Amino acid sequence: MPNDPKPNNVKLQVKYEDMTARYANQIVLTTGQEEVYLDFSSGIIPDQGSGVSVLPIHTRIAMPHSALKRFHDMLTQLFARAQEAKPAIAKP
Image (cartoon, rainbow, N blue to C red; front, side):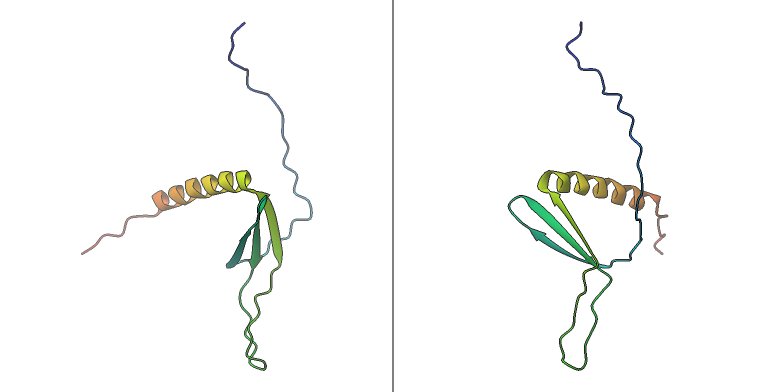
């Protein structure tokens, strides 16, 4: 019997429930001892009356530091592929 473990053939079905897409162009990142919090906002709302602008947070995602590392790796790969897909701009 070989010492190499066989891959676990677990079937996984991704199920999207209560999916509402929200646009976010601002992210507030907060770290704690155990988790990282990503707070998403669609942008700053200026208030001319009081002079205090507001950044309304519409979504918060909390994840452990290990999940943030995997998230970073996935984003890095995605960004690299997106850069490869862009056509090169010829310089005169």
